[in-house]
Amino acid sequence: MEIYLVGGAVRDGRLGIPVKDHDWVVVGATPETMKKKGYRQVGADFPVFLHPKTGEEYALARTERKQGRGYHGFTVYSAPDVTLEEDLNRRDLTINAMAEREDGTLVDPFNGLTDLEQKTLRHVSDAFAEDPLRILRTARFAARFHPLGFTICPQTMTLMRDMIGDGELEHLVPERVWQEIQRALHEKSPGVFFQVLQELGALAILAPELADTECFEAGLQALQCISVQNSSSAQRFAALLSAVPEHKASALAKAMKSPNECRDLTRLTCLFAERFSIDTGTPLPAKAVLELFDQADLWRRPERFEQLLETLICTPHKTHAEPLRLAARSATGVSPQELLNQGFKGKELGTAIRNERLMRITQVLTP
Ligand code: ATP
Ligand code: MG
Image (cartoon, rainbow, N blue to C red):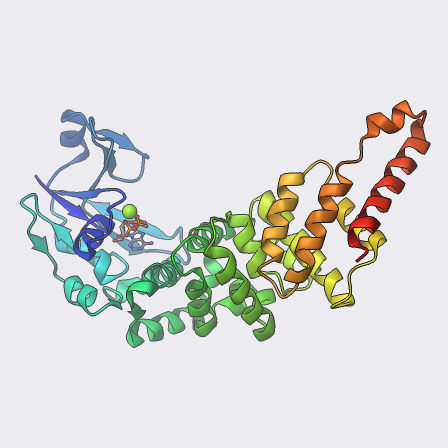
């Protein structure tokens, strides 16, 4: 049997950037020989094994045929007669379809190295069209390598447009889409991911609420601003949706099956942005601020509130952030214990807390 290094490790090695993990392909072996050598099989249907010592992934060379539509309709064929080239042919992009022999020499039947040098993202073969997830992966690699000058070649753009025209995106389950979006949010130029999808007409299908030009442009700017900081996925997602009306943004975050913290921060960011755009420029009335604090549950979730402010600073409403931060700091200082000691009880205690908070907010906000 022969073992080759494949995928991201070969690509990143040639790019001279740090290699995250090593994926290996094994040609000419059966599951039995692998197990005899001490490899542990992972997953029943897929011929993938873990190295007994390093724990790295070793996959038997395989081909994939499309059966039905969407992500699930694949038959995997793996046998000792599947060649390396056949295995590389089922991969998404040429720069991801290079292999290295154990002596470090390159096996590159699809000219990935030329594309790497020319900074081109190009599909390997027509088989690309069999998996719509590759559209999202390609957009994600465009986002990752944008700072290095990579772009998607016109033929691949055309192929992806054809796939979208054929309704392929509708077959992706929300979990897979979210996984790619979540990864994309942490790539070097996350905005490029969404720009590519917008250009392809994919955003109108995957996130129609966001595809509206004005919301989209404002969202991209906010995302760009937040992503140069050490920010969370929730903050990045919320920034991207910050110009979408709250009810639409919340519906989208839910439909995408994004995690609760993403949904919550998106809802709050849009809610605050909406409230701010009612009376722009002027400081908000203290009562409105207290209402926002209640809606954000500032009292129990101060760290989330801080995340929210960091996100709002990246929107056109940034002038509100600092006064809000000061008001929040003062209002959270109200001590229920002290009021209790003063003799307030039950419903009256609630009112006293509220009044004290309101007073402190007013003090901070009054110039
Ligand atoms: P990363 O640095 O993000 O790990 P990678 O290129 O190694 O990038 P992986 O998701 O780890 O990406 O996949 C390893 C390899 O498997 C890819 O380089 C590519 O050749 C192939 N691959 C993964 N997913 C697909 C897919 N959906 N369609 C075709 N090929 C794929
Ligand atoms: Mg990888």
